[in-house]
Length: 113
Image 1 (cartoon, rainbow, N blue to C red):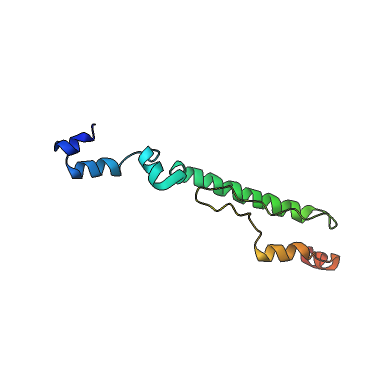
Image 2: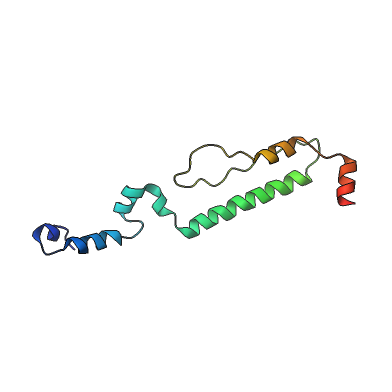
């Protein structure tokens, strides 16, 4: 397809708009308009979410089973996504508070009682 056909009159504006609208998601036009976000499809976003959840689950497991005197592990950073700021991930406030307050042996025995 020659885009000069639009200037020559043999390609209608409507047809040109339809062609541009339905370009592949990884086309140069879409990459120029939307950036690197076009390279991430739904499956890639789902895999990143699964990876983030698995990292948090591992962090919780290790934190719960570590020794009381052990240094607390840093909260896991999420997978970098397109358009996401480069800021470090921080644990939710309630997790940060709980990480410093360890339960007493009596509280643990009542809980697991």
